[in-house]
Length: 114
Length: 113
View 1: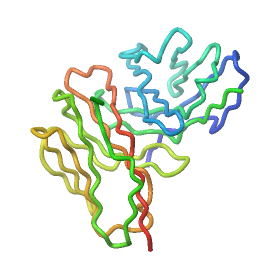
View 2: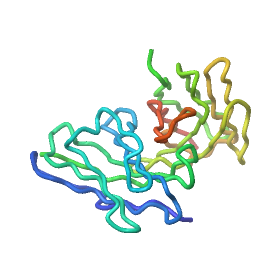
View 3: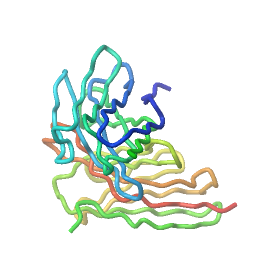
């Protein structure tokens, strides 16, 4: 069964450093998403992306965050200058033909900021 | 009032029991309702996807949506130890061009052999 894959599974970074989280969505999917889950808290929406543009973003997704689809298969989340509070699980998801179709999630990247 | 509320549990049941998991929500515009299962150190895995009100069944799982009460449920019949996980409800509304899902807190379920 097709799946969303994320790398790395765990990233440890010094505060203030840039980090790039990578995702390979399901191949025929057109909509891509990033969510995060701080330990013990809800899964929170960050951003959605379609046709090489951001469709929607949350208040969390400030100027420190950016997303990119650099080629036909990868979808990345960049955090420019990491803060301690960016420590969380980051999940990538994709859906097929519309934003209201089911979203399928990867297993996440655990980001630890020291 | 929180947009989506879900009892975090933990909920412990014996193998073979019927499990009922629930979420309430405040936004009457929600029309798409999902249940995800999340094992430890894994991503959310889609279990059920429902549009608007009504019931949907898939094997041992039944999802119910009652829009008049703003209440959704997931029933698991003949529960198995392998069903032990955290169950997340999620929902989104029409005109939701971005596909943003709003999640509940998640209910931790433990099925004892």
